Length: 107
Image (cartoon, rainbow, N blue to C red; front, side):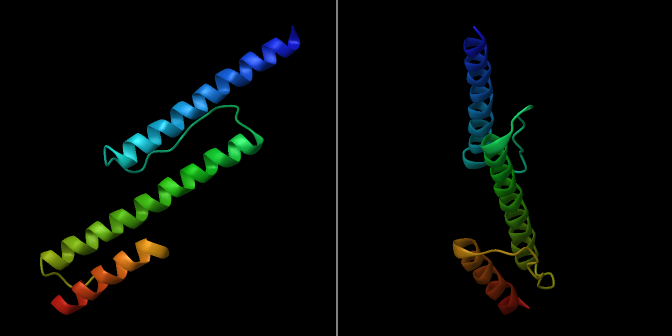
């Protein structure tokens, strides 16, 4: 009986985890709402690590895109070039470099 209760508990926790991860993916990837954080009470071990990784990814993406947006807006409005202060790598770094170049050309 104890094993059945544990299985039911972990099944509920897994359902909550999946729901939170889907919510973050939908909000950021489909709805364009950034800054969401997954919350699953009682998660531990690998489940906690997965939640923390998703939350870190969400926070980094949010910071990068908001900084990119502020810089692009300043470039369009003819303001002083705004330096991009958020570290980026890969494709995001290429986008930042392009916006940085445009901003410098307009200065």
